[in-house]
Length: 198
Image 1 (cartoon, rainbow, N blue to C red):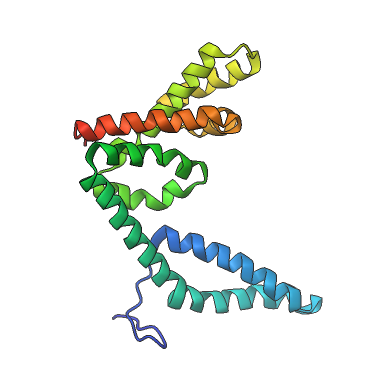
Image 2 (cartoon, rainbow, N blue to C red):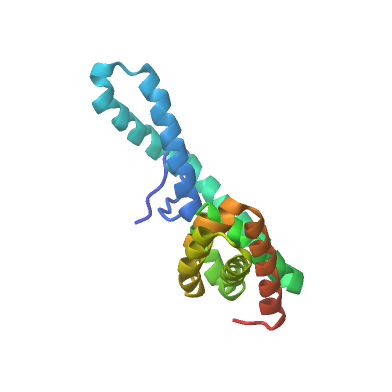
């Protein structure tokens, strides 16, 4: 039987908003806990603060955060659909070049269902190719033995699709290689879009 939400009488969907709603909820719960702990007496803090966060947060999650997350997910899906379907090769470039910044902050996980529905993964995987390309350029150009060692250890796993070691240990701290990895990834994404790789 459908569960109806209080106040709105809307049918409750526990998956509404997906990962985006979960990210918003995590940030909201952390903020709310800090606010409650400021006014809660120390003797009651250990028991009452988490309880209040859970009770208030659950209602906020169901009535506000999940609908906002669902709206944001739909909006992101619409934008990605437009870029993918209407912009062709330029869309492939934009999607692939913009994927590494999402990976760097962990937001790529929130968009995985959208990527799967639109079959964007072949285009987005070019971001890993951009990272490996930037890593190879660094390996051959640098005279720094320590950097060369980091790059040499990170490239094999980057080729297998795990770009985080190369990103966090090498390209992101150096900034320019990260930017060139994004630009290079964009060309890979454009080629994947041009050839309709799926």
